[in-house]
Length: 371
Image (cartoon, rainbow, N blue to C red; front, side, top):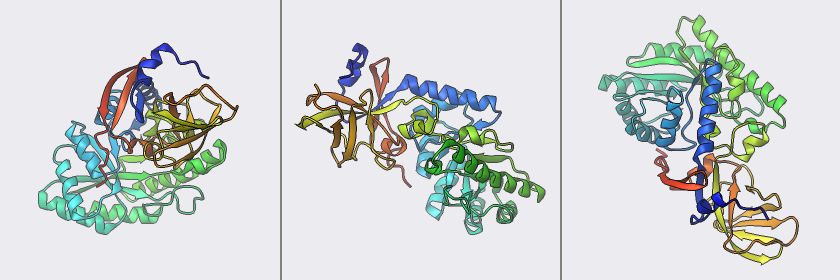
């Protein structure tokens, strides 16, 4: 059985299940990414949908991030209320209710939004003109079209459709065309680093070619935004990319580690053994309501002899690979996540740990901000 260091005991006394954040590891990750992009002369706009915390977003900005990326208007509202003044909502925002909220934010911070169709852009222009409130937009380019394995989601096809939409947007009132965004996601599907890099470079090449086409049409492209944690060190090497949106690097998870992404795991779920029904079986109190399983089953920190075999709603099932063990009901286990992003939104708060001691509880302020 793994020997528990004395300084770990205080944190492990916390009630379970609990989302434990090693703040020193997170701070090192923040600094490491900030220093990397600084050397590459690109901007960092971390995606805060991962951590959902203004406190952590402010740490990223203090380290050099120029602003943040949000997934939802409601996330942007929380961040703006906390004093963050440069926000990209990296989704299409459709419908008058949400657009009026977005324009309200534009009155007090620098905010931009994605578009991939002219009707949406015209609606933004109409409402922005009513309020005499300009707002920036980026055209989203779908990098997954004809790119096997690359995420095929929102956006217009590369090339001429991008030029046409950008040109049409540039004619609208109170809407400022700022540039382009593309997302080369789903890279974890590739079996090795070489094939992943090749696919990402091919997809991002379409983004840069589209940028060149738009510039040739006579429009200024100030921003070319892309790059997640899986591809930050690929995207930042491509000439023409201006900013990276990586977010998960702050926490990391075992999926990223398996793909060679070199940051520290700072986020775990503390769980408690509740049953030992058989010598080879361990049951914990952290299941799917505490741990996301969409990227596979988790593992246990410092316990390679424990293998997770299933997650129920309220329970984790583990098998001892080496037979019996001293593990008893009431023992605490730190669970390593396969996906931090979708685990965070299951919890109300982080338990901030520094040097093995609980420093504070931190509300996950954007939890449930889905609109």
